[in-house]
Length: 294
Image (cartoon, rainbow, N blue to C red):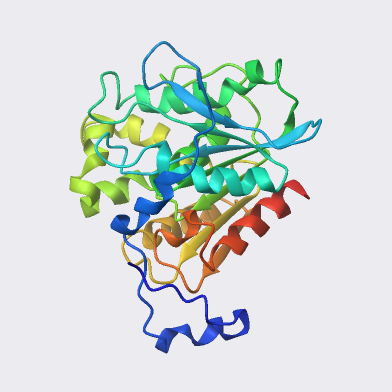
């Protein structure tokens, strides 16, 4: 099992460089799958076009978290099971959570443009859910981990898609803010570094040279400033993925996006931020509260 640093006081976090911390790995996430699922609701006809809805007690209307899990956009890695503990933790704060599944590489119809269209359609399904449940659609925060963070940023930026784009949607649901948990939004960088067996090449159907317009349309920083506040939580020990998030920050700020806050998780690798039992959870909780004034 992992070695958590729960014995370290918050005041001591600046000293963790020398603590010898063991960070979580993907194998350490098995305990997260034991949490109860939310209510399964389909937003499309495909078997993978569904989400899980979590509602807090009370009359509402509830602010909403639209959540995207990670897993390299690959069907073989990750699904909604590891997202359930964070969904329950957010629901305990009085928030509704709509955890979106989407077609991933290995599923029929995944890749370009299907995976992107699923992310958008999943979020837009909140229009229908709000007709049945007490949801406050004026306060919707998109949140995602790893490549789910890419999708969370992308859905917040998609109103800027040009009409001729395959990813264009007329009147998409307006996003109030983004919480990126170790987000991986820079697709060209993913391709160059051949991460996840170069899954981004499979996602986009080819290389940036072959399909420059696809990489442009699928990369959130291409549309900066995206017009909403973004809180990005990056793990100090996440040497593989945090550089991609930091590149996004540089690219977006170079395009005058002044609504980005970087939150350094000094005790975290790549996975601690999706486990509410770790010391990183308060950073996630407080980022959500700040965006929703909750």
